[in-house]
Image (cartoon, rainbow, N blue to C red; front, side):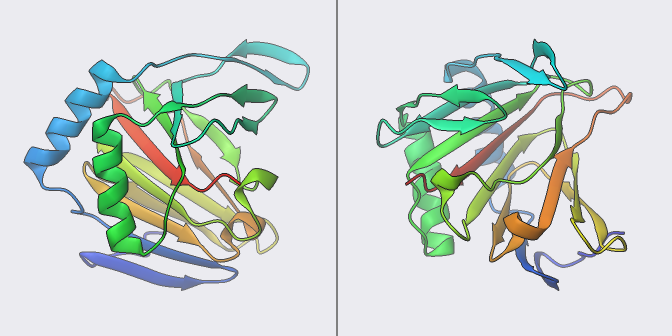
Length: 199
């Protein structure tokens, strides 16, 4: 179900607050950031263990911050590198829009349709009680699927466009799961940045 139709999209969901800005960055600026981040970020591919089986994560990742605080999820612990100048620019733009300060950014690079991120919530204890997550997308459009943990009828999809900004806040990480699913379609690369505050 596609819930969003306006340039600035906001919707009241049970136990969540979502805001979507499709054209947060101009095409020119989005192209610049995609090219620069692809070339300059120190990408890595960690092993992840699911149901007792270990394999490589189906995407590339990186963690940058203004501190040295580690971030752990799904049995993986990441240690940040210092923000690059481009990441600081993006962080400043988002902070002015959202009115929220962020300490860290987790980057995901989806090289093609076989790269994905399974159902999860950003609910690690380092993020605090009701974290504000700011998600910026560059590159290929990928559908963002999200579903309520308990209300079976609450399942939705939102296409995340090149240069867009998605804000997740309120109780969302307690009650909702989200994913970037695999696809057999021939598609290009996508880089996603999720800014958060690690305590």
